[in-house]
Length: 108
Image 1 (tube, rainbow, N blue to C red):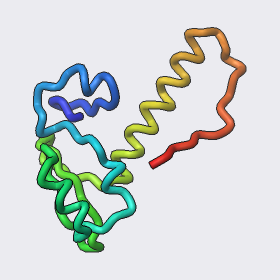
Image 2: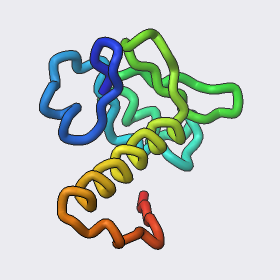
Image 3: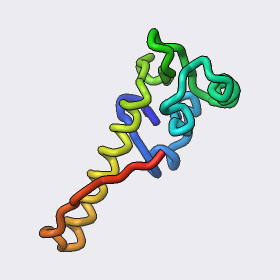
């Protein structure tokens, strides 16, 4: 979710749900599909944000925030960065500073 000049993900975004046009959700349904797929076209009708066709026939997300367009991979990276930040914050707070992640697995 994009609020004013900040990008927020996860619970922070959901808790501050004021501008529905800036809330990007359910991108996992769009990943690895072409823009012209029947399922994608049906999903686009239900989404509150804009989905446009990129030149390579991939979905391109458009939020009202700063009128920028985002690739699905960019949104995924934002979410993964938030998860990594949360992990290190909790690790620091809990005193398990020697604990280091070996892998990060993301499923679609």
